[in-house]
Image 1 (spheres, rainbow, N blue to C red):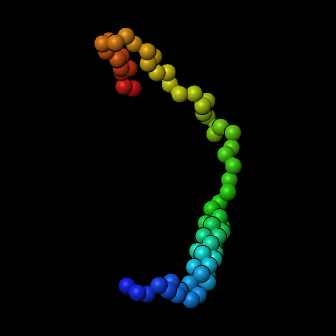
Image 2: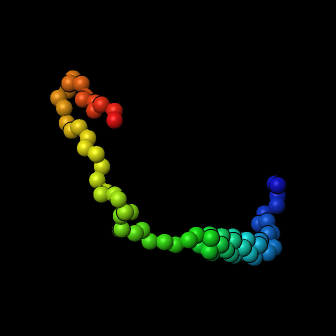
Image 3: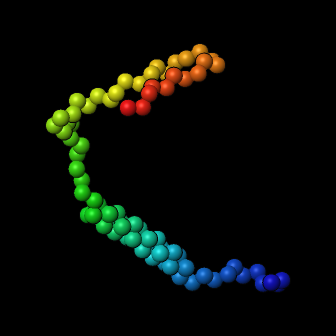
Amino acid sequence: MAGNDKPPRFGNAHLTVMAFAILVAAIVVLAFVTTLNRVDVKTAATDQPPGTTGLARPHPPLQRAPGEPAQVLPAR
Protein backbone atom coordinates (compact mmCIF):
# COMPACT_ATOMS: atom_id res chain seq x y z
CA MET A 1 0.00 0.00 0.00
CA ALA A 2 2.66 2.43 -0.99
CA GLY A 3 1.46 6.01 -1.29
CA ASN A 4 -1.72 5.41 0.78
CA ASP A 5 -1.23 7.42 3.98
CA LYS A 6 -4.84 7.22 5.18
CA PRO A 7 -5.62 5.03 8.22
CA PRO A 8 -8.04 2.17 7.54
CA ARG A 9 -11.70 2.84 8.23
CA PHE A 10 -13.38 0.39 10.53
CA GLY A 11 -16.76 2.12 10.64
CA ASN A 12 -18.74 0.82 13.60
CA ALA A 13 -16.24 -1.83 14.72
CA HIS A 14 -16.21 -0.49 18.28
CA LEU A 15 -19.98 -0.99 18.48
CA THR A 16 -19.59 -4.56 17.21
CA VAL A 17 -16.93 -5.35 19.81
CA MET A 18 -19.03 -3.78 22.58
CA ALA A 19 -22.13 -5.74 21.52
CA PHE A 20 -20.09 -8.95 21.44
CA ALA A 21 -18.72 -8.26 24.94
CA ILE A 22 -22.23 -7.63 26.30
CA LEU A 23 -23.48 -10.82 24.64
CA VAL A 24 -20.66 -12.89 26.16
CA ALA A 25 -21.28 -11.36 29.61
CA ALA A 26 -25.00 -12.16 29.35
CA ILE A 27 -24.26 -15.76 28.34
CA VAL A 28 -21.89 -16.19 31.31
CA VAL A 29 -24.49 -14.79 33.73
CA LEU A 30 -27.23 -17.04 32.30
CA ALA A 31 -24.99 -20.11 32.53
CA PHE A 32 -24.17 -19.27 36.14
CA VAL A 33 -27.84 -18.81 37.06
CA THR A 34 -28.85 -22.00 35.24
CA THR A 35 -26.15 -23.96 37.05
CA LEU A 36 -27.22 -22.62 40.44
CA ASN A 37 -30.85 -23.55 39.73
CA ARG A 38 -29.88 -27.17 39.04
CA VAL A 39 -27.64 -27.60 42.09
CA ASP A 40 -29.25 -28.73 45.32
CA VAL A 41 -27.57 -26.71 48.04
CA LYS A 42 -27.18 -28.81 51.19
CA THR A 43 -25.06 -28.48 54.27
CA ALA A 44 -23.07 -31.39 55.61
CA ALA A 45 -24.52 -33.02 58.70
CA THR A 46 -22.35 -33.68 61.71
CA ASP A 47 -24.59 -36.53 62.86
CA GLN A 48 -23.24 -40.05 62.63
CA PRO A 49 -25.41 -42.81 61.23
CA PRO A 50 -26.74 -45.25 63.86
CA GLY A 51 -24.39 -48.13 64.66
CA THR A 52 -21.17 -46.35 63.72
CA THR A 53 -18.48 -44.96 65.95
CA GLY A 54 -16.72 -42.93 63.30
CA LEU A 55 -13.33 -44.43 64.16
CA ALA A 56 -11.09 -46.11 61.61
CA ARG A 57 -9.22 -49.30 62.38
CA PRO A 58 -5.66 -48.72 63.64
CA HIS A 59 -2.85 -48.52 61.10
CA PRO A 60 0.84 -49.28 61.63
CA PRO A 61 3.07 -46.26 62.30
CA LEU A 62 4.47 -44.63 59.19
CA GLN A 63 7.83 -43.78 60.75
CA ARG A 64 10.56 -46.37 60.15
CA ALA A 65 14.31 -46.37 59.70
CA PRO A 66 15.73 -46.12 56.18
CA GLY A 67 16.07 -49.58 54.68
CA GLU A 68 13.70 -51.15 57.21
CA PRO A 69 10.81 -52.93 55.48
CA ALA A 70 7.32 -51.68 56.13
CA GLN A 71 5.21 -53.88 58.37
CA VAL A 72 1.98 -55.01 56.79
CA LEU A 73 -1.05 -55.93 58.87
CA PRO A 74 -2.66 -59.25 57.99
CA ALA A 75 -5.87 -59.03 55.96
CA ARG A 76 -9.09 -59.51 57.86
